[in-house]
Image (tube, rainbow, N blue to C red):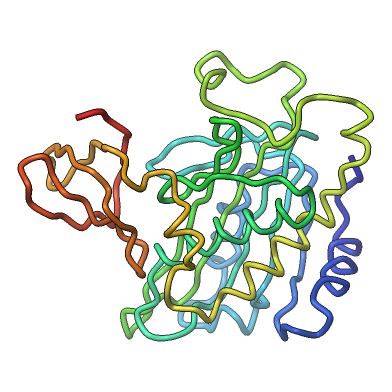
Length: 276
């Protein structure tokens, strides 16, 4: 694969952007790191108390690494991030509008990756609520949004962490992931040499930045999500429920008709497919 390069990412971004968006990325590249989300949070925590984050760290800063030793996912899970096999990065932005919903931003990130994969590789991915993308029935993209509420109860900042499996690690996936995790490409040395991660990341950034001002979840996320009409198992207030997903709302929440007939709105937690 083409070596990761902040200069090349910016060049490809300018080629894709063509002056459409004013926001452009500032890429901080690491050969190895514990977690790109963690590194971004460290930089923020090192700032003097009360200082405006974006007067010290540019909006659109991207923390990018070829290898994460402690990649993180939602619900405290880890995200395997082996060297030379994928793309692992975090994007720092300042959410627009009042009471910006982290769920909406997560949905935006999923749409951005889906669009970029189609644009660069002509491959269609499937989205599973809330933060996973699938290909050939296996998960290959994980998304983790983190942030902090400001004085007005809106997000002061958002760190959007994204991990993408492009190729199978040299030693393969560990046994506990072998039936779950997938890759965008089958391993083939010639194909791997022709993959340009810089162009791919530039495309993702363009699509993500283009969605930042939108307060509603895109139709393609809501209408093409693989949980629609599926029977699921979810937890609310420590109680387990079974129901069928009838819709994904404009704020990214699930509208679920429970087994006993009541309707519930699910906006957080873990959801599992389950036959009723």
